[in-house]
Length: 345
Image (cartoon, rainbow, N blue to C red; front, top):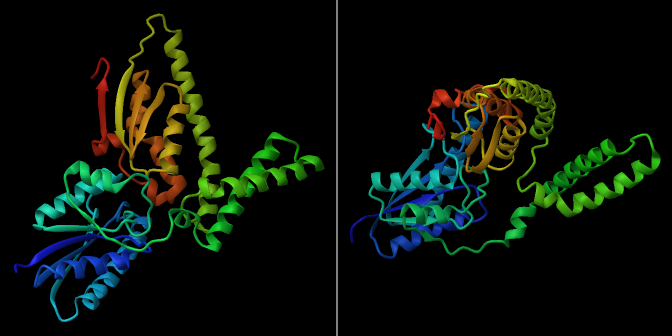
């Protein structure tokens, strides 16, 4: 029979080895010649520090997978192609990954796509929404590998050290918040605060932190967040003054407008922080946040200009990625802004 081309998107999951094996052996049942395309899609900017780290991890994963293909192929004629996707573009939510896989499949005349049931984008990043749903939406047919995998709750809870890190972080966050509301010098508040924090950490740590914590990176992000809070307060005060000036003017020159901004922050906690920061700033209200795409209502032109200039976006990236991550073009410069309605729409 003719050679068959198989595409296998990879991520560092507990079932990736089984997925590669299934892709190779099931394809060889119907084809004498096989061309296996192994790809890793990167959700990070390759030219930033975090992106460089993820690129190295992805290349390591591709090298392992290439060896697995050789082992599973045996004496059969199998050609392996490896590729990193997303190095020249920003990939955000599952729709972007699905469209990238569809383009790759069309460009390389792929006959079959084999998907890991535990697939997550990049090497280790976590996707909050279903990639399967988006693959169906773009019309890319796929074959889900029949693998043996642990129960879903095991993947969320993680190893013993990961559980400890989550419990430890949740305990001190809860304890600190309790003492802020109470009296940190009163023994009763110290004791009851510890008890409450213990209950909260046991109950909510695995829900609050659905990703492994970095023992070095997480404290650094906490310190950067402490720097971010005064900056956010300054932006709130500045926006309050701008709104007050507009309200006090007899003509009240407001310009209610609905806008869309494609941000450069990952979904999950970074996107949540940015969306809430925008809402806390008078004159802007985040209406919807979906896969790094924000739908924002702006009340006055200066608020819209500030949004398009991306100062809060860069500040949030500073919190989660450091100075290198904050050094990006503005949404206006990237062409990631759109006015959907209003006098300018």
